[in-house]
Amino acid sequence: MKKHALLGALVVIVGATLPTGTAVAAPARAGCGGHRALQAALDGLTGEHRLAGAVVEVVDPGCGTWAGASGVADVRTGRPASSKDRFRIGSVTKTFTATVVLQLAAEGRLSLDSTVEDHLPGLVQGNGYDGRTITVRQLLQQTGGLPDHADAFADADVDWLRHHEFAPRELVEAALRLPHPGPGWHYSTTNYVLAGLVVERVTGRSIEDEVTRRVIDPLRLRDTYWPGAAEDIRGRHSHSYFTAERDGVPVRVDGTRWNTSAGGAGGALISTPADVDRFLGALLGGRLLPAAQLAEMRTTVPGDPERLGSEGRYGLGLITEPLSCGGIWTGHTGSTRAGHHTVTAMAPGGRQATIAINESPTTDAAANAVLAALDTALCPPRT
Image (cartoon, rainbow, N blue to C red; front, top):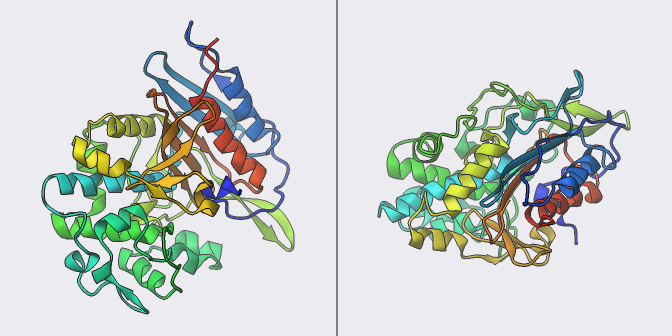
């Protein structure tokens, strides 16, 4: 099974030779087991699989926090990768947006069973699509039958794409021109663009403002922000890289400067592993949602095996996957065309990990190695 789709791998071609990375790791706390296996997994990503850089932050309720890194944050300068660098977190943004929608449901300001048409009359109509038959719950759950606007730009000129500023309704219109994806679960960032517009209609404020005031500011996520139309990442950050063919030769392209408005409410946030860990811990720990809404969020349906693997499931902005040590992890993955990829998750015992890489994997093996590193982070040796 091609579980690499969890990371949204863009192309599968052999990349150019990458520079040797430098491993950086904090010491393990006595009695909590070591981190050699996890550090080795990071080193494998930048060595065997030739990714520019890979970082992780692990938070364990009994053992504290550990951060590791391998490779470089900037290929040109050779600056070492660091878990303190800011990244584009891609679809991990969806979990932030879903949290705000569920907060509004808890406040009685919207119903998960209300329809898109109830909130955005006339927006989802035509080409066989009908907002009267799609609920807010289905938007968050990816079961509303809408295509992904990203597919409309799959063959777009990269230089145009990275500098174009998209409006949310432009993205919706692009999606509605696409063929129907078929019945059942279908991953679509358009669902979350619509969810963001629902939030705007209900509150009178943008999804960016609502996520900021309801989640980012209360949790003091100082490195997390919406970039808007800005192409640069503020402050200390990792560069990002993707592979493209030029004259038939694969080359690494620096994708750091990128307008991520195509992701919008489903993919535009910038953050760090530490901030993402804090957010997911607060969410699954019950600090952001009442118990009833958190239970709704964690109620899952089977996903597409080609996207989530044979046992992957999807809730309301949450993914679950089995762990080698038993149980499941709960969290989300995120990818960007620019090259940043993130996965964040919590194991049943409360142990968390967020892994970020700064280059798009070019093989299934590389992408699967990222997920294997997550499993290693959440299922550590205790000796």
